[in-house]
Image (cartoon, rainbow over all chains, first blue to last red):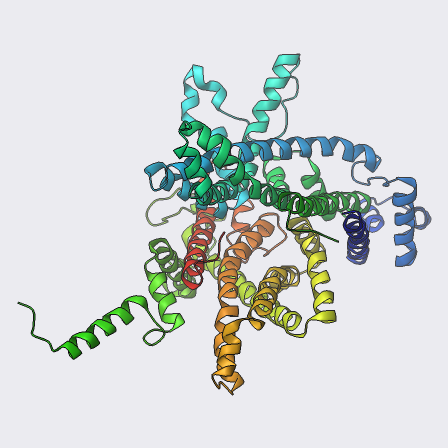
Length: 332
Length: 307
């Protein structure tokens, strides 16, 4: 196991290095020089100012030198640089955004997992019933739905139209169309409620894909398990059905799900970028998008590293989960 | 009253009926069995019909579209769905139904071409890796592992933002460069398994002196997962392209694509909500039908494949 982990760690470093080189090169090589933009927008700027700025930002250094500077600063000093667009050190900027994204990801993941598994088990136990067919159709639909369109449709239904919200008792069922909070809301309970209110729609959208795929997988896994002899034995022993399902069938059915879930997390990251954009959720996905478009090098590199690190970590976790779950698999 | 048949005729008739019922090799080929199984799968048939229908719509867009898709008409802006604009008009007065038809061309082209190129590249790499084994295999598989570890959408985002251009080729290229890995893994796995199968030995022992006959056994088995993967890739590519176009990084306007039609639609959500509903609806239906089709193909070509 230790050799396996060591090998994966080495691979991770290589991948991150390669990605950062690729990304840095692309950022530097493509047009969008920040100093030129500044010069174009400010008529009073002097040539010596431009020269000074270029030297300060190190824009005229050769590519490898600039990359080396970024690399040493990031790896050895933990200094992720300074954001040109936001005027803040990148570390502080990312800290806030990271929390928001993690909140959204965790909420979506949690709901998707819980609901998906429950729905999948129910569907398996009531195979060929109407609810089973409905659930299967919804699962297919969830997998085929473009994330950003689903987000827009949800906004349309629950934030713009929401005819049920005309009833005062249900007024809270009309959700905000974006953002993370309403400015000016003070007080503990009100703030929490407001935050939750804003969280619900993005969470539902982001969790749909996961929910659909995990429900399908749980269903097929459960169907397989329920036909096994040991389940029949448990039933024949006279156990109440509830015990048969919960204690014997479900536990075995859920084991292979662990690896699928670990592998699906990078997929949720993909959805997060689009969801954050539609809902203007101030998170890492939106940050990456805006930083790349705005040629904010420091932020873009940092955001990319975040996503890459997360994806790689969960892939490694998935492999470890495989090994734990199936004793026949051994890495050496 | 049953016909008086001689015992020999009866036996022959029974044998024939048994053969047909079991689909034995004497009567049916692998492809015929697969086709029969496919047609029993209702959802897959629906998917196939819808996919073909949408493709026809895209091909004949210029013939069947009610309006010219470039026709800007500033006095009919934001017309809600009604006659003669079945899906309404957008902020420049262009008919939405027409634009959806033309956008279908772009989106479906991206889907099909990506699927084909990923299938080709992936199969080549996987076949080489599976066939020659050893060093080449490990090199190629390390590459696959590394590419697999990269988060896809952020990477596509970065590449699409930084590589200039707004056409189909660029998108397809980006998708192919990072998307061939799944197919390569599939093909390599199949080839590795098939190389050692008994039926290959048996065919050789039976005097199948020509490699061609062996290929007739190996190739269909290796092809099946590739066909399924390619079908599902069409849907995936359409989703990815529409996502990128929505962000403004995919197909650039004025070329319509289902994704970039949704780009501005969010601004008009309160006043012209039909702009947001229809393009996405078409993406959804297209991807759904290709998913059904892929599922049906998977069941037909190899029912043992779980998942």
